[in-house]
Length: 460
Image (cartoon, rainbow, N blue to C red; front, side, top):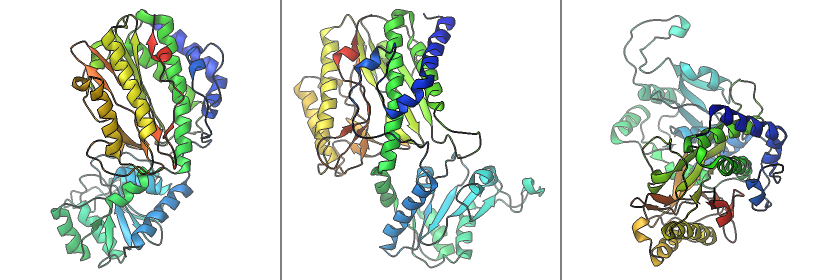
């Protein structure tokens, strides 16, 4: 097992050599120096990575305006946003969701109206704020604001009704309003009692906009994947150099630290709110029997060994844009079963890329992948659909699943997971990447990682 001294030396040297390469990783330039694995990267394509660290407020305002224009076509005068990801997408305020109510009302004309706890007051009021109402905390007692010196045990406030009454005071009663979810009957009853009309669900409208990525989102997504390429290269080089001295935990920890230092070197920040937002940097690794299960439930701290499966995986996001990147690996000596599972799974990734064409249904792509799996005799090892939609929240619609009949449209993003799992032999093969549906032709691959035997079938 690699020692702590060796671990620190490995990660320290890697980060030191990346002090210049951090920016080059963002620009997508070919890796140089001692990075053996990086020399196997696929060629750079024409999608340039973003140079900004987050989508600007103006972008979010434009998306909010677009949503309002869509709603205006059906006579709506505003929409209540309750879902964290809708609030972030349409207003740009990155925040944490707990049991505390955070709602935003978007009128067709004018600025958002915020409803939030005192805990978030500095975040809200330093962003896109001109109007709003604040309660102290969950549960809120009427008239109690310790932050203003008002300490009392007043009546517990129904914050949903409190928010509705605030909208009524702003002239929203009797208007045709939407919400980004479908309220249950108990909530709709309160809406009618206060505002006189039910709020209709515009959930599909909101999700429809979020499913189709804009050029700015794709550029930021490409930047995240450019870093992710380097993280995988680092992890693979570490495996090749240290081999069976490692645990999967060693690889995951070292690659996550390397990636964090690499990425944060490029992120402008001063510790104040609204910079370095939506960043997720997580590299995982598992080896041995745990690869034979789609979602293993045990902690990963297993020795790397010859004749085993090993998966390097994870998620990298910058301001919510990015996605998954996995590579399924087998360590020599290989059994015929290993080779078969790896080859069929890899081939299905290529099928997904070629078949994910604008104008076909999600179910059609899933059908072709599953038919290929069954034709090649691996039906017992199929555990799930080929892919999920990829968004700021991770999984989002649509899904490459037999029961999803949505039509593929340009800008839709998907994971790449036609995995195969064999618990009897303790092996599994699950790839993932980011595929983006194009206006014409097959989908675009967001990473530069190869699908080759040279990359994935290693000899220590």
